[in-house]
Image (cartoon, rainbow, N blue to C red; front, side, top):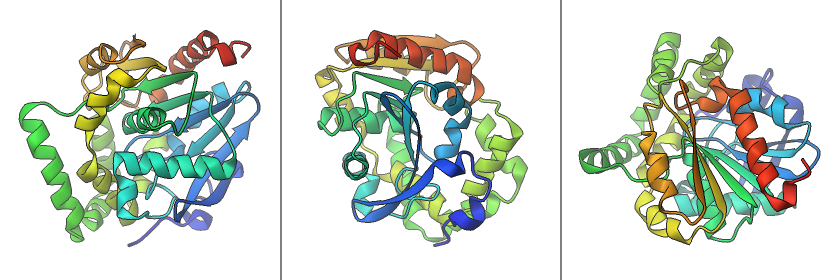
Length: 295
């Protein structure tokens, strides 16, 4: 299935000079490493890539060493074995990649499904951050009809080999990509829409996103949330149309140390719309964490 090629599709990729390729968990990862200071792990959500952090990076890099991977099958990371698209499998694979890099994050920031990956990693003792920041985290299963409908639909789309190519074909229409992103409640810069369009034109990238949705089990994560002892900062965009802002409040009540911070007027892609506000929240979390208090 057609994958993105870094030397062609990534010629002008944000922070390209920080990119490296790492073999771990049986496949090759694209990961960006830059900055100096305490190690912070940034994990994007379903269908995104390292590019989604580009505006936030410049605000964080003066004080942190940033480790920013493309998740399995996403962006320029190889298509993984099927079990690496499950939540525990993705957490284990990312843990293996961090071991190859010999880094131990003291802070971890995840967007949407990326936040679920980080919480799973923490629960499974693959990382031990002083604090976790969840940006519009996809942490709870859909209720009611949606929960019974979307997972089977994703499985159907994933198993049908035509569907990823159909999604990729639709991405040739810039307006279609813009509509998808606006459907999350966010308004982002034109160049960022272009990066998403480039990703969505890759059938392999689309297949990985569908595969994640088809294999995601948030019921188990929800059941384990009360075991999370790490401080969890839940950032909620008030205009998020993908994850209900009320889910952040619900999740905060399930964990041992949860705090909710609202960003008025931000949609699902809050870190791309309001990078300054998100950076300040991350710095607040760092100051509250004993091992990073000097940042």
